[in-house]
Image (cartoon, rainbow, N blue to C red; front, top):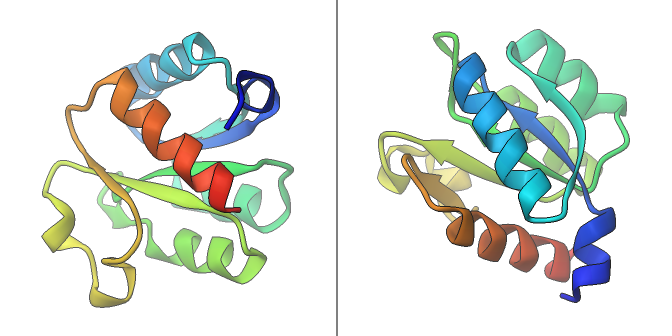
Length: 123
């Protein structure tokens, strides 16, 4: 993926921890992505996932004690790419989502860049 494509890609960030969400937003901005939305609840995420304008999503698996999989289901129906972020490892994902990309916390900006570039190139 070229840098010009990266510069216009819009990202939905779903993360309940405010400081981590801010860190992710800064990391994405440094990588040349635009933040389409940054939300901290499953309700907000579901609403944005259903009708928001974005190219790719970053989904924290555990959002304030709730699992993010209903949001992932919406994204699958819309055909939008996403990556899970988890502190528990890829093996903790349900079987139907184990083929999806996952980043284990903590991760580096380069891992995020590479994962998002791969998702957007395949979309």
